[in-house]
Image 1: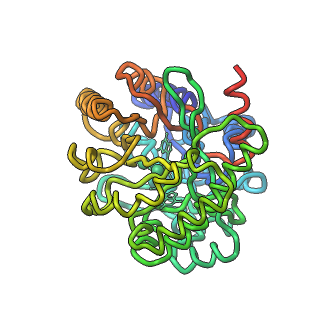
Image 2: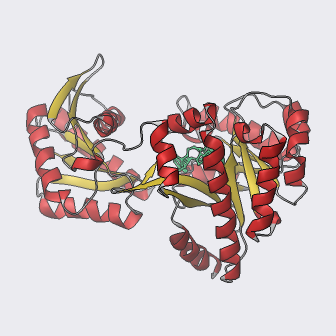
Length: 412
Ligand code: C2E
Ligand code: MG
Ligand code: MG
């Protein structure tokens, strides 16, 4: 993402100055779940306008703004300054937490500083404590500042019961992330991703909640709502005259365990009025390596409608060549750890190449997930990957914003 590249450059320059002893260096990370991209850009420029001692402030992630101050030499100083920034922005923006990292006590390199600040912000988001505090960990000293923004200081959805309640109260939303064809740059599909709508906007659900929901029956109820909503949305886009794009919906294996669940899925799709050829279901590869023939057999009534199947998070679980051959998949989605995971970039690139070749060798469409930066895009293009998803193009957006984006994308 351009913002994060720019920020990184500033951070490197500030670090060099701090190493020479010319200035101090504190990195601030404001996690602001649920804001739109323009809102995040607004927060960054607001900070820069109001605080002359900030040398940079950028929107570094879909849900975070990071800032650098060159005049903070100590954690206490940095925390006090973070408090001033939160106070100044409090009324206008939604924060779920803020974190501070100070050179050299917290970390000595740019990535270390930024990730420590991000970790502190994440910890602060989870904490109910709205006081300023400094936490000590083994590797580094973290300054943790829980946001003053009251109700949003803690992720409001920590319990499964809350999730059920949110479903009943109509607080779940779907956002849609575009999928882009590499050869044309066109949006060819979207993936529906569930969000929680609360006072603080639309929040992502922690992965652990989805996993917990899978272990109980909750995911089936959520999943039915997701499928109903996504099918209705896809049908609605078509009736609005929007160019037809495929709409992918995540299904967990727990949702396709018995005939009555399958019958319900078939019913939802057929009753929604959507052309089933527009719907794709994503099954994740990390799930239990159940007998693929059994899974195929069970999915048959759904796929017979014309629905297509994609295998999600490829590379993280049990998929083998024979599994891929035996499942009626049309698309594989390469997990984002292959794009930006730990380890040597060269090794990742080789792994990525092997997976792309394997998928295409089997006649499947290959999509790379989690593309955030131009060089990652260049890599997947060079490898001949068919399509991608990621913040580089767009995060998941509410339906109306997505429709506008598609219209703009396909009109030139
Ligand atoms: P997934 O299906 O692999 O979805 C991709 C996740 O990566 C999404 O997170 C998306 O917001 C995020 N993402 C997309 N582009 C980027 C990028 O460039 N960088 C980074 N760092 N992340 C990116 P999200 O929405 O939090 O969903 C997480 C997981 O939760 C999904 O992984 C999926 O397994 C599950 N999930 C989401 N919605 C549903 C649902 O309706 N039903 C079921 N069963 N699972 C769902
Ligand atoms: Mg998915
Ligand atoms: Mg995935």
